[in-house]
Length: 284
Image (cartoon, rainbow, N blue to C red; front, side, top):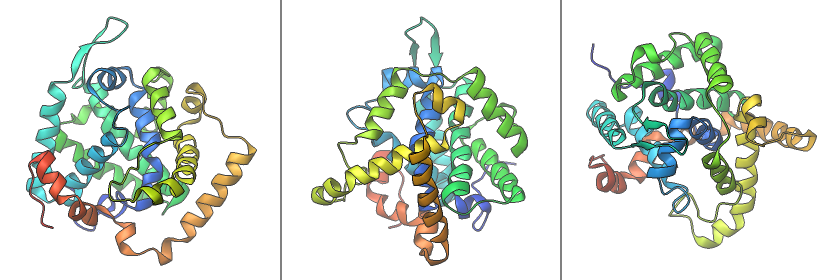
């Protein structure tokens, strides 16, 4: 059967674009660039320092197109991503040749988003029951088929996936210069992640937003990787996280549906940019 996006009303469709999953943006980036192949690709083929939010916006574009853009847009997005990664290759500083389509690295980038979405909901949103996490992962793994992530490169079950993530942390992920660049950028973002946000508003929001992202990035990284990259959760930070998590989870009953599922609205807001940058027409 050909790969297809998760159907309307599925666990992935309901949970993947909850606004509170954005607390995991920093952790997902760190998990990705801590992999040596991903780090090499970002180092040589990305303008992250000049455009720190560009990778985030492109990731949001791709994820939302895959899940909410409809079957044709999902298939086109998957093929475009695969083609784009064909050009990302070179020689790492240690002399090792790398390619973004190395199966382990390519699957790992897809895997990090599943890990962060589930964990962000556990801490700040709508915690998934074990059966929901299992179903979400099955849908996310199937979504990888649109990207041509091979089935054998990701475990079949959620418990096996958890073990896989911890094995990757222990055996494959490391601190590096790209990780530290990402951490510096997240702790003091000069630019707003939202081009439509007025400069005055961003000046007011920049410091508290950076603090929240700093806290949630540390919280959502596996403890061993957190320590490895130099992040720390002390008594004060844990207290702030308990407060943030409690308030965020309790907000669920009064959250507008548009915030519990931002994907469709995001695609409407970004439809002109998506047409320009990705060549896809999304109904406004």
